[in-house]
Image (cartoon, rainbow over all chains, first blue to last red; front, side, top):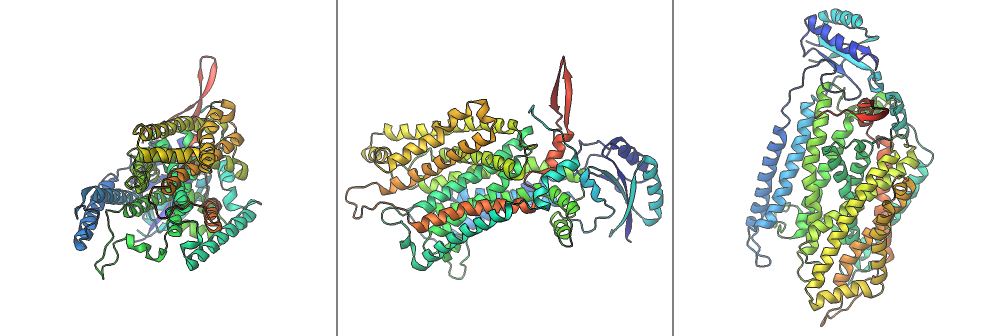
Length: 174
Length: 459
């Protein structure tokens, strides 16, 4: 069932009011998954009373590094064994040059997996913006609630009571 | 950082998006001139492709000339981009904020320019794919014992890593452009590029971690790339002056010297071209000037040690090479020019605070450094190959042809054009980072003084 979302907009100076709106939403029975704050600039964690986001980003570089290392090992060892040409009297499986390419493979794997991890852990890409206001990029603070349609009017009321200047509506797919 | 201008978020958007949402008068003519230079260079390359490498000045025994010099130069420039950004992010230096993006973007275009030099240099570029394990049908694979296979693996890792690094750090700013752009297509294109960024605390949190984590991951790659480039030379046991164990750190510090100088140049250009003097303050130039003194002195130490240990052996061929580098024209003039421009003119200049705080003087002193560092690479590569050896059947000398000169100019135009195009479509100074910098600044009273302070959160 498609969910609806509502956004209350607060000015740059209404940081406390935006925090109050988050508290009021919690008191009104909305779960932390249903409301969040949107800002155009990073504020210190907990500014709006939001919970610390949990993530598993640190697993990504380790997984990527392991994959990159294995690919590097297979690539260097496999290609040399497949075409065993002796050059410069060196062994076919010559460790120092293999280590160089395996190192680069490890780092490439770690970096690419980290990037993918950052994007996915940030809940991106996001197909539907929901309720959003472009003024957030100018410093306004948005408090958005995404929930079932019948709970939207109550959320709107809470946001207005907390001091939201403008209210915007939107919809989401999930 | 005492020198600071407090600005509102709207003002920051307006200033830093002026070049993206509008078009400065100088932009289009500059692009046209750069495109003309690029096409001239590509025309010269087409001529070289058609006629063969004989149209260049490369000949026995000097098979490495301007192209390889230029390759090493651009790899060097590319280094400071990520290095300065990564180290400043890791140490959470407050003055990093306006500097990081331009430095990172320069890395990408400099790396592309470096790679293009390899294409210009090889006689049959259509076989470049042989460095990749591709030819399964014939069972022939690349020789991984060759440094020419290490090079592409390192450079491509660095290019992919730094491009992704730039993109991730750019996402919040693309979202701002999405919100500010007008017209039918621009908001949609930027909307796709920013992946639907909204600025939730989770997204900001991960963005902060990304800066630190990716910096930590990219730094070891940065160290490996120039080490491997130096090993292109150092593993060649038959050329005096190349076979040195100190080459890897020497090349790395040389790369940092030229690259940090290039960042200072770009900072000065950003002030003049995009009028960003509210963001790039004299304090920023002062900080980078002090960093440059440390880097330049360290680089000179490595240069000195490399020379001392080469001379200490008292081996005839080594001494003959050094004599050829320093006392025989035209190398002697190039060597003199290199020492003056890379160290003896700029470093004493940077000792003066007035110079360090002047964008104009920093611009000219850092241009000198890059002229010097280009000459340094030339003096490492060419005299080593050109030195006349007994029983050599062909005592050639190296005179770069007009084809090589045009192609080298093309690479400079390419990097400049890349930076201009990037700055036309994306903010060249990280907007969200600047806004955060404004948010966390406060003035506090200590005794009878009011001093600016920064509040910092550990990510």
